[in-house]
Length: 219
Image 1 (cartoon, helix red, strand yellow):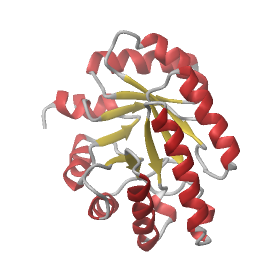
Image 2: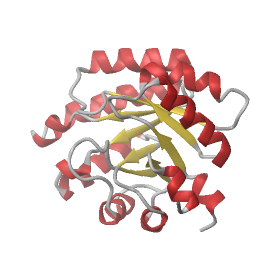
Image 3: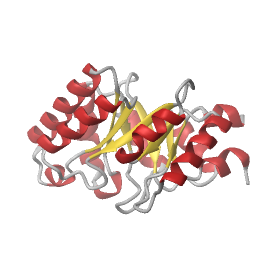
Image 4: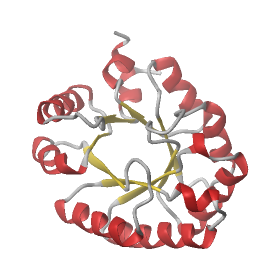
């Protein structure tokens, strides 16, 4: 795969707890240089990223309920409203993993539905983070069914903070259980172009990477 095509599928990401302003400046410079699809930054840095990427086609993404997903829906909604008001393009939300493990599917579906209705109503993209390393395959399939009913834009494998990241097996499982109009973002542990291309072959159309420059340059 040509480097520029691979770059066009990457969310260039900086979400470590010790991320500072200089990291965001560098992230945005690299996004412009390599023409990544988006940058994905902590909520406190979205205004900075939007300013730096003004007049470029590069999207600004951020995270909600991150990285553990167990904030109440009212708090997640407040985050969504604030982020949409700031002007981000895409919001990656973490589902309530405990509810899924408890089989509280109605509450899980309501949360995803309420957030999707609001975010999509603001003409923004919603990506739903599953945290697949903590779920059984049957739970991943049921979550895909919910996301299909709700009509989210993307599902995403992982935060990178809880156990393993993306695998080709889980991307294939998600692809097999979603309608074609819902895309997959593979995220967590993707370090090389070979890994990135394997995720794309398995069905991902977006990649969340902090190692993006090395992936597209091979350095």
